[in-house]
Length: 137
Length: 107
Image 1 (cartoon, each protein chain N blue to C red):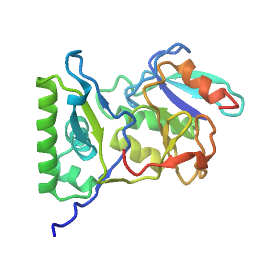
Image 2 (image 1 turned 60 degrees about the horizontal axis):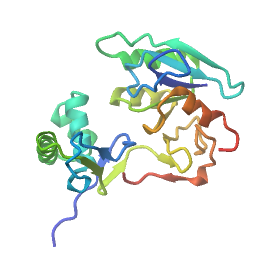
Image 3 (image 1 turned 120 degrees about the vertical axis):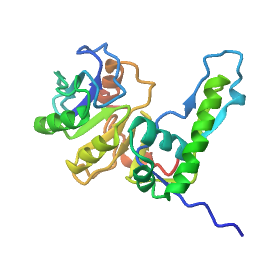
Image 4 (image 1 turned 45 degrees about the vertical axis):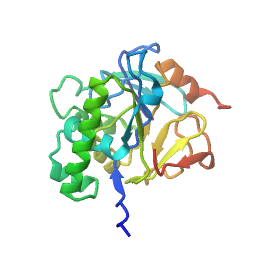
């Protein structure tokens, strides 16, 4: 039996679930599935400017695994840009470093720190039990 | 006190997605409901603008920050100072829309 895939650590949740294509003729069904770990790899390398070793450490995976994820992410990104396809972001094999909650009323995502304590929504004051703890996107 | 990242110092201002590069912070007092606009001292810096912004907000006594996106360094600093991080979805276009949710007692 193949070894199960190790979960990848994601630092901050992503509020949106994808991007639309500017080309009206491209259908939404024909979109490219971007995994959360691929999105995170692009963010860490190209947006934050980290090197691959540091980014791999942050995601708690080996450097060669990170390189494979990053290569796959760039390939998908290039396909989406060139073929004007929409992108959907989703992921299951991930976990968050913090306790992140999503409010069911105002849809904001928030973390809990030691000082603030209560998990109630900081925006709409929705009690914590109506918010769900984020496990994946 | 909460700090919201905004592009202009007006209620009709759009919400700024990037925490460090925001031009203004809208300070919202939970108890009185009073709002105030302050210029982000780090908005024109070529680098480390987030660090400067966090130090500024800590000196003002802010307990939670509301924005669309945070960098790794900023997130670490906010956690270190015990400041709550809130990520808002793009359905909130303007500051007044967001304040409407925050001030409404029954929502």
